[in-house]
Structure formats: structure tokens, C-alpha cells
Length: 226
Ligand code: ADP
Ligand code: ADP
Image (cartoon, rainbow, N blue to C red; front, side):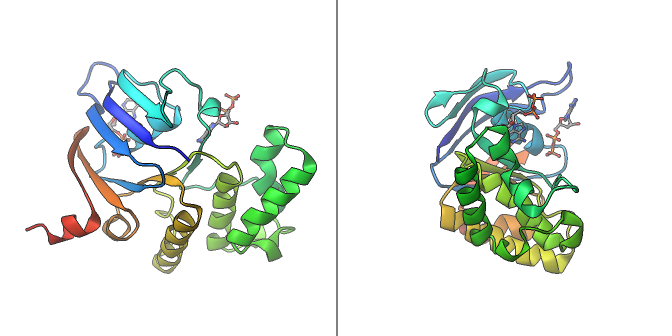
């Protein structure tokens, strides 16, 4: 687990208005931080700079006390969950969850232990031999989360993971993500434009507007605001 510290982070695409325009934000070890704001305010860009999929124009990105500006994604040990879960259709649930461990050449007995632990946490143990096509939408989302947690990453990054789901499933997955995060106590950054997610999931909410932080507050403080 690790803290994430951002100092004066700027992202300039081309020569337009900066997509991220001097963001300073400290996310504590184990904290669940929501990034919220209107479309185009810079949420995804900020998340991609944390994970290392986007270069930082200026500023410092410090994860677990180490400056990571020049570190490749694979050296940051973070796990990102996308909204389209990107499961491999020809692989079983077991192999989908095991995939990052296979890449890292983890020994088989350790893979087996880690996959089964993740499957227990996510209540997927009865479905390990199935293919993604034979799972419900909620189960597929859980496999994607399994793949994220099995890497024992320093932090989870979510980019609108529930926006393709119907309302009922969204409610259910919201509860599961909150439960999972609390159980693992892992530092989490979660991008959404959904009010309910913003107000129910996080320890704190960071409101972005035109690339800048407008406010950082607990859901309660935001709610009680005039
Ligand atoms: P959000 O996730 O809040 O919708 P984004 O981070 O996707 O916002 O985008 C922030 C701004 O940066 C927008 O004005 C968007 O058009 C611009 N932008 C995002 N990605 C790129 C890119 N690859 N090239 C140029 N401009 C981009
Ligand atoms: P390459 O650049 O070697 O073709 P990738 O860009 O697919 O490979 O990813 C290399 C490594 O970077 C992955 O094994 C993974 O550890 C890390 N990585 C890539 N994308 C992400 C992401 N979205 N979230 C977390 N880690 C990632």
C-alpha cells in the first residue's frame, strides 16, 4: 500500500488550455479518493498520469515516497480497472485472474494460492473454470477486479468502472467495491461523474473543474454545504 502525492501537476496537450492545470493533492495510505467533475475537466488525464500511461508536463508525482515521473507503468505497481473489463474470451476465469501473475513469471503454486484467495474475496470460487461469455455482467466485473487485486498492487485506480452497467447492477457493484476496498484497506482513486458514487464510496471527494481542483472535502461536508 502506498500514499499518492501530487504537487503542481500540469498536463498540456499541444498548445491549448492545459487539461490538468496545477493540481496538488495528497492521498493517504489506504484512503479512498473520488475524482469528480464535468466531462473534460481532466479526471482521466490525472488518473492516467498516476498510473504512468500519460507523460507529466510538469510537477511531481510521488507514490509511496518515491518520485515516479519517469517510471514506466510496470514499475509503479498499481492496478487499474477500466470500464470495459477487457477479459480474454478464450481463457477461463482462473486464467483471466492469473494473467498478470503469469506475465510476472510467478511460480505455479503461488499463482494458485493468490488466484484462489482473490476468488474467495470476490465470491468467484464456483466459477473458476467458466469462460467470460458464460458469466453475468456483475461476475465479469468481479473477474476484472480479481485481476486487479491478485497483483497485490500499491493502489487501485478505477476509471468509471460501472458506467456501462444497468442501474441494479451498478448499485450492487457499488456495494461490492466499497466492501472490497475496506477489506483490503488499499489506497484507491476512483473517477466518476455519478453523484451517488461520489457521495457514497469515498473517504474524500476531489472536485475538478477545467483542470484545477475546486474543492476537496468529505462526502458529508459536501452534502451539508449550502
Ligand atoms: P475527463 O476525464 O474529466 O472527461 P479528460 O482528462 O479526458 O477529462 O480530458 C481533459 C481535457 O484534455 C479535455 O479538454 C480533452 O479534450 C483533452 N484531452 C484528453 N486527452 C487528450 C489527448 N490525447 N490529446 C489531446 N487532448 C486531450
Ligand atoms: P508493453 O509496453 O511491454 O507492450 P503494456 O504497455 O501492455 O506492455 O504493459 C506493460 C506493463 O505495464 C504491464 O505488465 C503492467 O504491469 C503495466 N501496466 C500497463 N497498463 C497498466 C494499467 N492500466 N494499470 C496497471 N498497470 C499497467
